[in-house]
Each structure stands twice: as C-alpha cells, then as structure tokens.
Amino acid sequence: MQLMAKTKPGKKDLDSYSIKGTNKVVKVGDCVLMRPAESEKPPYVARVEKIEADHRNNVRVRVRWYYRPEESIGGRRQFHGAKELFLSDHYDVQSAHTIEGKCTVHSFKNYTKLENVGAEDYFCRFEYKAATGGFTPDRVAVYCKCEMPYNPDDLMVQFHPSCMGMTIEQAKKLDHFLCSDCVSENDAKRSMNGFPTSPVSEAKAEPKRRKRVISE
Image (tube, rainbow, N blue to C red):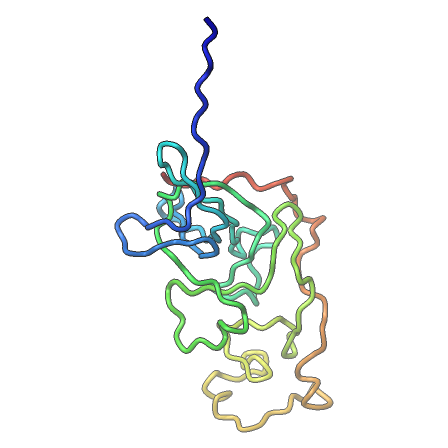
C-alpha cells in the first residue's frame, strides 16, 4: 500500500497583529520597534510589509529595516539628526513576538513642523542601499557658510550661530542678518551641491548585511 505524505496547511495572511501585553494593533505599513538581542542596544526600527500565520498560528512579519546613521557604511555625520533614519533595501522575516511597540517615521518636512518630538517620533529623508552605502537622493540642499545639509536638531536662521561666532541667545535676538561672505540674501541658501558622503571605495561594503539578531 502506498502512503501519501501529509502536506502542511499553507500560511495565511493576516490584516493585523496585537502586540502582546498592550492594546496596540499593528497593520501592514505601520512602523514598529523590534527588540534586539543585546538589551543595551536601542530597538530596531522597521516597516511592516506583510503579516502571516502558519498552521500552528505562529505569527511572523516581513519587515523592511530602517538604519540609523551609525549603522550605515559612512557612519553618523554632523548634519544627521538624533532621530534620523534611512529606509534601507534590507528585508527580513521575524517573529511578531519581537515587536515591542509602534512608532512614527515622519517625512523630513513634517518632522520639522512638529511642536513636540516624542520618544516614538523619527524622520527619514533618504533611502539607503545596504550593500553599497548609496543614498537616494544623492544630492541635497546645503546651508550656511559651512555648506552642510540641514540638521533639524540645530538652531539655524539661514546660518548656524556657532559658524558665525554667535551664541544661540544672540542669534534669537536678530531681526535681520546678512553674512559678509554672501553677495545677497539668496546666496545664504546655496543651490544644490553634492551630498557629502564618504567615498564608497574607502569603506569595505559587505555584499549584504547579515540578518539582524532579534531577541525572541
């Protein structure tokens, strides 16, 4: 008698997932905080692309990782904000149990309009290729005499006070200022210059970042 092997029931897509121990519900497209294996590290940030359950009702999520500047090949730069993230082309499938909370990743423009930045507020203005260290867009407007992109954490009124030898208090009292290095006010905001990044050739790029170690 020939025995037929039993086939396991297929996976099913879910519309949402409730984070254990909370009243928060995660849906596809939401940004989440995921627990790293090392407790001293900050949580990983990811965007949920898919939620599915297997025949044992184990729920897993397909995520697209956000990288912090210090995790990128070029590292953190002066103009990177404290809450800045890069949307990478690095995808993984992880247990939904590793999700410890939700967060919001704003556009750069919307982030600069926030009156109060909460612990779960982040922003993203670049996409990042994990294998090469490349950014999209690769050009961005620069400001001030230092010709650096805008960092939303730093006070800037057409210039950085420190670049002009001023304190923040002095800069706040100004009604008008024209930099001596500028021919006109319009020159204070420079046109599109090259995005300052380290040459990729100087950094050893791995063919692909290994899976992030998540604490189950």
